Image 1 (cartoon, rainbow, N blue to C red):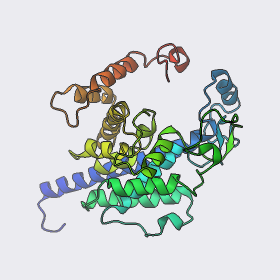
Image 2: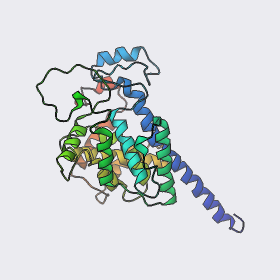
Image 3: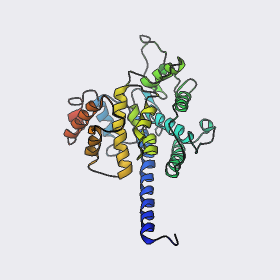
Image 4: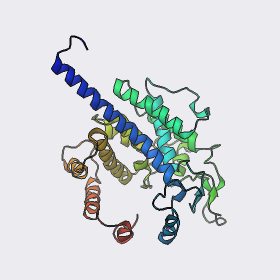
Length: 315
């Protein structure tokens, strides 16, 4: 940078280093969420605590990527995603296409291993973020992508996963051989089929929103519209106010770590944001979310078996 005054050059170097570290943390959030989801998938949904202890006893201290699935509901090859991880991937793909950094138009027909897909889409997303290429949450496009990934004719289209399957039929034989369509996805498919303007399930407040938010937060971290974009993406499949309020709180946590890195004061910082009367994207249920976060803070030193189900009953 010949001719650039030394103070300005130092500032530019500092800003470049900060941008790189933010970019690293943003892409790390996306890839880290995908890897964690795949690592836990073979032990997903083991609600019996004794059974979980039995499964873990053979694996400690490294329980991740269990070679044989112990999942009591569905079986997928180790390394593949849960329905939550697959939702995050679809959201990532939609974001990477809705702007100046579109992937090859036949991305769904390409047979790429999941890590390659994640890295390619994540790199495109981060290129857009730090070169200020216009990119957005396109609700119509995202709805189409979710339907094409989880809908008819996909690996999720199994008899037990039928969104129109009536209750009270023959008892299901579990685990099924293949991925599981959860309640919000089934409701989403029914709503799209019915031509409803609001496609999201209005009664489901499970963890889908939190598990798939990384691509949106990574893209919009530090921007005033971040929370608005997260809410738009979440309501495509979960149009439930509690789900949205909890997901937005999680988005604040993730944004904090992407922008600032490790910080022991992150929890207090997010609580301060939620308590701010002038905060962005306020929700009617924010007070309930604050109370729950405070409850977590009070019990953070306790082991999970001391808290579940004694304190956190529905966990």
